[in-house]
Image 1: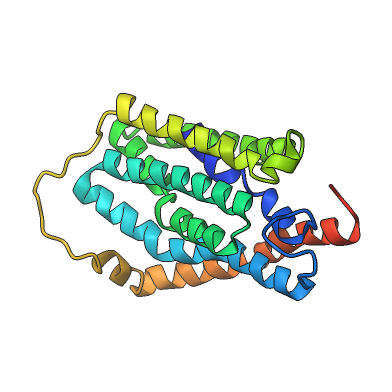
Image 2: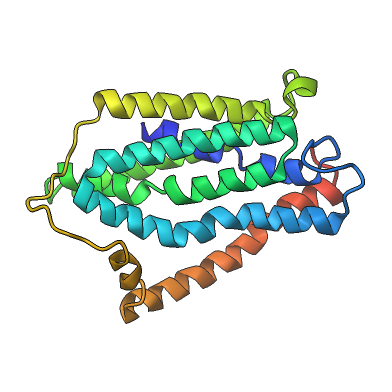
Length: 244
């Protein structure tokens, strides 16, 4: 399930550059300026991660009150909805719809902490580290296969009909399989002993604690540093080196 989920949310990574900068993309007029395309590229790249700053701790917090399965289902549905919305936006040439899909992805598809919590629930103390290692392997396999599948199917089959949407259709299939497998085969691993009242603001307040805030600032700066490379090398290769 983890591999399929990771494939469904990473399959579109290679496509964003082409959706924004390729002249064949239906999202922009052929006359759209490089500046306009760059602004949208940055917006679509950043928006899921900005939203995830608030949604990831909230999802983890809710998993301690609602159980792991419900939150994993929300994440799986989020990936499925994102794939469907992205497919529709590309077919009909709607940037706004693609942005909405990106926000949905940012809100609901950050389930890795919950998956780690599941491993913690199921593991003995002596096996916890190695089992979490196995989970990271599954995540890495999905993150490796997703972009490869996306790149392979981006322009290879029926491009005049699908434009760049075919990988997102495949992502929707993977998302649907994740939903079905989670619903049918995943057994709840955590049930709160006491039904406590909780405020949704609590996990956001925890972000302001000095130790959490300090490490968060370090992580944000780290993300900024490597994102400069990760996000802007693909447009450079596309626009200046004519990579396909």
